[in-house]
Length: 452
Image (cartoon, rainbow, N blue to C red):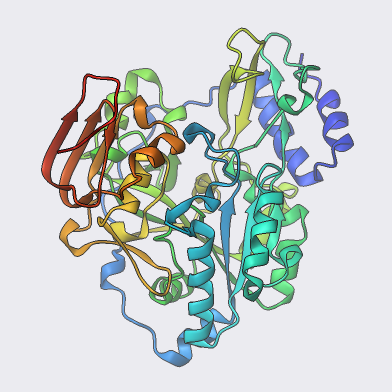
């Protein structure tokens, strides 16, 4: 079956925007035609060299103010953190006691406006799952502005029955018939919501985009000036891959054009090359810079969306029931837009601009003294880290946030001088615990016990 009309009817009935519907139609027709979504190693080359943000000069105050008045910040805030047992926006998770990701983002924005005098616009892209909780939380930060002006809402797309390629049906829970389309949905959202037109009408030329769980990603005036001077329509911040980044998407070149390859696009036979951090040295931080007039033109030319590479994920319609019907979930990555602009750019940034929380191990690291949180809300690796975070591997006793919280009742251990930490079995940590070098803890019992 390759008839898209049932999907169009379903999406129109749900109020999905026309740009998002067109983007999904393109992805669906690729699936129906059995087009290969993989990107083999033989088709690409490593990136040899890039400009380095460490060499950028500081713009003067007048130039900074002028650039900031033409800039906006957008945070992706659609993730629930379900893999860590959360059922609300990950940005509402506490980074330190009583302080959430969103509190620190608000602190960053407020400090930025106060210290520069620029009215930098701020947007959040929420999903249907995170919108209500996030909007309620924003009442704590009226200084950011009205929630209606701040929020843009991510689209949803139908799951596809793997056997028939028809819209998946699951009467037991119709909500499970839908899935998020990946953060590549940013571009149809900006077009379909009218946010892009509103920003341009307000004189905004530059948009800085990053994930809400990456507290290291702040609008740096040096990077803004570099991007403005470059004339590029799109720029990606990348940083050097470490062993902990082997599975993340990496930058590459094909026929002279920069592109992003995600793990889902890598053939199994090429997995070793994909994970070779000496060959593919740079990974995408998901900190992106967009020139809005060029984005408007590209979206208009393509019908309100960018023709991004499609990631075809095969799952079950009920992710908790492996016996439920198999479905396809079609996604795109926003960083893949680097391939949509012939004159796109990339720049190497320090590791301090990449501090996401994807696992409870990441959260433990962030809560420890391996990171320092400034009064302005910025988060940076401690000087002792040399720009590289410790590698933390926690077993299933700590898979969920509640389990980690129970282990941190007496505070987080010191990790600022720790190279790696592997924990097997239940432990009760304490702020008095100091880990140095490579540390392995093992408790074969079932009762939680102190480290020492």
